Each structure stands twice: as C-alpha cells, then as structure tokens.
Image (cartoon, rainbow, N blue to C red; front, side):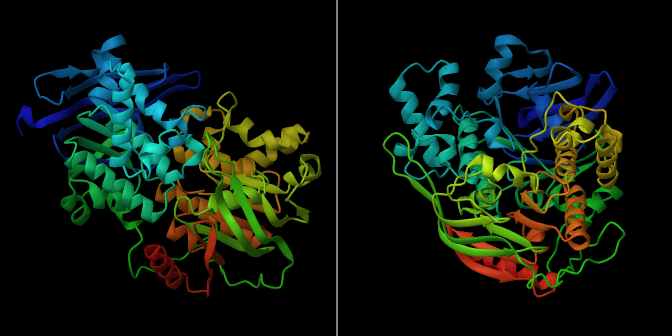
Length: 538
C-alpha cells in the first residue's frame, strides 16, 4: 500500500487518563492504517479502548488525558498530511469537520434541543466561512434529503424532539457529511436502534463511502455490524490491538482467543438461546403470571406531541389497549417512531397522557398531579439507555442516591450498594467517577441504582443498547433473576430481537398502534425466530 492510498495512519498511540485514583491506560500502543475509500471496524467489549481511540484521532478528549505516538491524517486531495497530535487552536478546529468528522452513538448528546436542526447543520458551514444564508440553507436541505429525511424543505425548521431516534441519527450523519470530510468516524452509530433502522444507518455510511468518497472508521461492539459493512477489522482488548486483518480472515479464521470469544457470542440461526440466572440455572419463562393482578392497564391510550412553528400536532400513540400483569416481563418493540419509548415513558410517569386511560400501580395517569403520583415513584425503577449518572458523584454515591434521597441510614445505603455492585461485577469501580467508565460499566452502575430501592415495577428502556454482548448478558441475567426470584414486573423497551426473546410477551407497535400481541410459548429459540420474522415484515 502506497502512502497516496492511505488516509489515516496511527502508530504507537497511547492515551492515558490521570486521575486522583491513579493512571488509566485506556489506549496503550495501538497501530493501524486505513486505506482511502474503505471501511474499517474497530471492535471490542466496553472498556477495550475503541471509543477513546476514535476520539484521540480528532483530539476530542478531556483535559485529564495525555496522548503520545503518532496520528497522520491525509486531506481529501492527498497533497497534505496532517500531524494530528501537533495540531491546536485554529488548525485543529479547521481539521474537525472539513477533514474528519465524528458521528456519536447518542444523537441527543450532539443535538441542541433549543435550536432547529437546520440551524445546527448550518452551524458547521458558518464556522468554515460560508456566509450566504440562502446557500447554507440550500446545502442543509440537500444533505437532509441525501440522508433520507422526508419533507426536508419543511422539516429543516423542526426541533430535535420532533424526530424519532433513527431520524436523529440521520441528522447527525448529515451534520458530519455537510463539509464533505475525507474521514468519517462513527462511534456506535447503530446503538439503541431497531434492526430496520440499523440497516438504514449502515446504508448511509456506505453512501458516505461510495458517493461522498469518504473513508469510514466505525467503532462498535456488534460483530454483525462489522460483518455487514467493514472491509478491515481491528480487534481491541484492554487498550491493545490483539488482532487485525480483512473481514473474511477475521471471521472465518480468527487466531486470537479473545476474537474467537467475541464471534462465539454472536446469535446465529439455529443456535439455542438459553438465559440462565446468576447460579447458572436455566430460567423458566413460562411461569404462570396470567392469573396475577394487573400492574398496568391502558384503554384507548393516546399521547400527542404539540406542533411548533405552525406545524400540526404529532400523535405518537394512537388509542391503544393493553394490560400488564404483575410478575410479567413485557416487551415493547417496533421501529424508531413506532411509539414504544413514548408508551414506556408514560408508564413510568415521565410522559403526559393526552387521552384515554392509563392505570399504573393503581394510579390513573390521565390528568394525574405530581403530588398524587409521587408516592408511587419509589415503586418504579428506571433503566435508561443514556445512563443519567452524575459525574460529580462517585460510582458508590450514584448507586446510593435513591436511598440517600429517601433518607435511609448510611449503613443500609452502603450495604445495598455493595450488594448490587457485587452482582454486576463493579466493586472495583466504586470510588471512580462516571466519566472514567466505559459505556458498559456506566450501564451496570445505572441498573444497580435502579434496583437499590427494590421497586415493584422496572422500566428498562433499551437496557443493553450501549453494551457489548458480555455486558448485555449480565444485564439480561440480572433482570431475569429478579423477575423469577422476586416476582418483579418488568416493562422492557427494546429493538434487540435477542433481548426481546427473553420476555414473556411482546407488544409490537407501528405508527403508534398495536400491530401484534405476541406470546412466548416457552421455546425461546422459536420465539427469537418469530420476532426476527415479524420485525423484517415492518
């Protein structure tokens, strides 16, 4: 491979974080080369250093980080090679966006809720010298059309909350593409998206490569995504590259034991799916929850988001009926924009009900006052895909927070936090701050916090969305255990067919309406295949 064929060369990259608790060697001697016009995947479990590697490439790191080694980035024309680690100030700002752009795993962390998406796309154009307003708007509309946003001329004036999760990710990709960079860094771009939208986002990255002539570096824990889109693979483990090569070689002839374990965790057609508790015993999902009293009941449930700037109201949930029994594990599944997350948030008391009836743990949510529902909040545990941890508190303090707010004794707070930390394997993290953790570690902390008050009902919104397969299995096992052993009711919002197959029942939503109510007959493998079939029909 000649130097003219290379867009990115990383040599001996080390990224260390210096904290009061010591030095964390997030990336420790990573080297690889990315060819122009190709897609490379960096894969590994949470904490492997893959996301830190991507952020190091554009120097998007906190002040506590130090980098060494070498990162060379060629411009699109191939007539200049940037020494990234030496860049600062105006040169660094100019490189970001014009030469390399990043697509983050969580669009809400990028999109500002108080500005229209058009203004935010145009911001990059303004920063790089495009002064003509009409030209900026025309370019923003054009890029929105290219990433598949319908009615772009109108929706350019919409705000982020008026788009589904999949559409937000499309907008973030549009923001990355608008300056036509030669390198796109995509950090878990399909995380927390349903299978249909995942495929569409991967198609957009192919568009970036094939029509925009950009090289793509995709960061993921999903080996299926790597197989679908990547030409080359870099496998990372604990800050090191353990194996790299072309996709075919890695998938069919993996040499490193860690790569072999990653591939073994990928669900395959015909592979028996079995969930076990923390003691390794298979968990029976056919327990008789049908005769239990109702925990949640909806009749004609309607949820509407008000329109803005003369736009009509949007009906997210359109008059649906369902019931959830105590001790049941119910899954809400569907494409982005189907209404599944909105329904879940309404059950949790986080979303106002517009019409119909929604009874949660004996409280009618349509017109409920906060003071009437407040006593029930302690009976609901929340597990979100975005963690919502407080960076100013330690991991232990984050876990204890619900009990501290409930004015429990220091002894009880410490004992309960330690119990869940041991269950999730995070005892060694208790004195760290959330910003020192990987995504998988953050989610385990968040789940521990959700469970510490021993709630009757647990709302899990994409609980494994940001996790690798190993960490995801820990979450699945724990939720299954507390359902089976403690009789907890679990409402799970998910796009993941594997996760959904652990539920006792699924409600499949489309366009705010119930498309199908699916029961798990006890054969998890058969249920998994049934879910895959239904989701492909959407």
